[in-house]
Image (cartoon, rainbow, N blue to C red; front, side, top):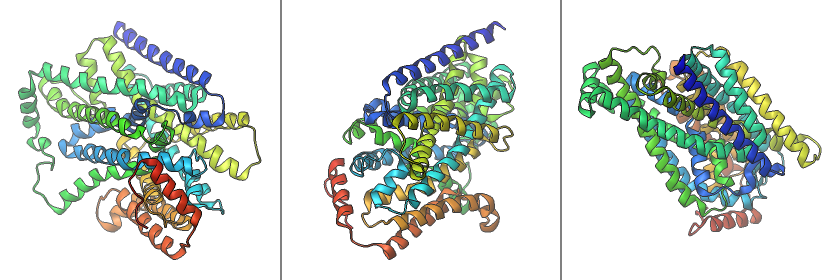
Length: 503
């Protein structure tokens, strides 16, 4: 009981800090654009850590270590692919998107950027992309609430439902209060907590086992193949397919609204360079820590005789065994931070999609104060629906996150890249590609393995189909437009690029 008192105290402190930051952000937010995009004034460090924390989610603290624990280093290809994708996203997409969203009528959401960039007067592209945001983010938020419920079950022996509700209520509270700025500032604190936890736990566990040599020996005693990036198998078509599927997670970065919206919120395009260095450094350290937790966990539970029923709880279980209860409480808070940082970001983007891209398209002119109120109502609404979906989870956290990640990557990724780097993309090309990509992800997830006889990650066929449709339809529907060309050149110049991409 004293141990649980320490842990609960740490969580109470964490929750109080989050609510306090939300209140501070509330005092700094005075209009709708401020609530949705923090007035485009995020400094590089805040943008970088906010993007990283909202990106990694409970997958970083639970999903990835669990996958490494269960299968070994072969699952590290996901981390490798994500690091490469994040670097390319910061290096090429961030400065161009920051510049272009301002040039394109000061777009403050991804759907509004598509409409303004492509001069779509039909409004269909904006409505379709806004609907995609709401659908896939509802699934994504649901996966994070599942992680929250599982977390409380291990940490306190409480019910899954109670844990899920606590995570949902606290996250919704500071998100409703603080908006985008609140979500971003809490992300910074949460990102630091996650990184520190993923460094402390494996280091202490290695010490308990007897050092790096004993740790590696312990893994080999279980299965030497766990230390191979190919799973101990000779390179075959099946092995290569698994590696490609894992690394293909990196493709998803180009289309994740809750990540790329941080690019739009930076002070200017030049901030992307410093933000990239901070963000990729944080990401590399955190992912290495997560991989280490899973790998060290194999040796730790083997050598100590402890049992672990659920691989996704390896970080939590090791911390409970090895660390002082108060430190355990803060490790638990770091797991919650990973979950809540993603939920808050996704709720804000869902809110902006509803208000900016659905309500304002079909509704009447409304005051900024009313728009902020609608945004807050939408935050609560999406959370409620996601909570209902999370009541009876049937998949692992990694599976749930993987589906939502593929959905956004295949729907928006090609559209974002083509908008930024190909001046001849048309609204009809973007729309057909986006819908085709989303449909492919749903279809492949349901029928792909049976029809194709392969477990290829659905983001790959979805991304390819989107790209094909977008390019073909754009070439069939393109007509010269001097205003689009001027905006394209202005965006390129504003991003600091040397010259525009050839048409």
